[in-house]
Length: 132
Image: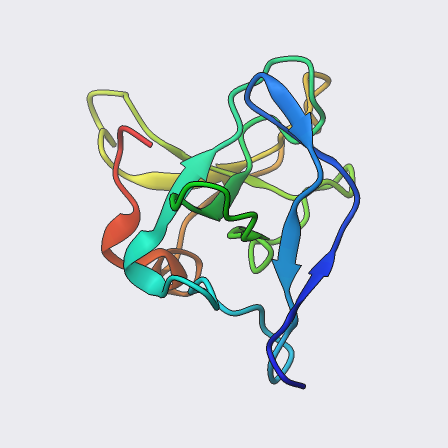
């Protein structure tokens, strides 16, 4: 495939819902860099809007004005027991503070939990920070 962008459905992000573009997959995995502006313009973000089913999910978006590059960054994470994509979080307890874990995204939690392994964290590289 040529790496061109294809439109996808509207995705609720932050305070707006807008049509976004997602890169064509190469070798089964989406590109991590913007085809127009490169990887340096791509930022890792988390959906913060409380009323969306995607709350807590991680995504990559191009910061260049007018660019509509978008790709979910957490597609490699396992599904929880409810069938939803698990959410990557960081522990804030005294004993395990700073350790990443995966949990259920649903408000009616299925109690899914597992400590994040290298294969869960590696795709985020240096862009993954506790403040994300």
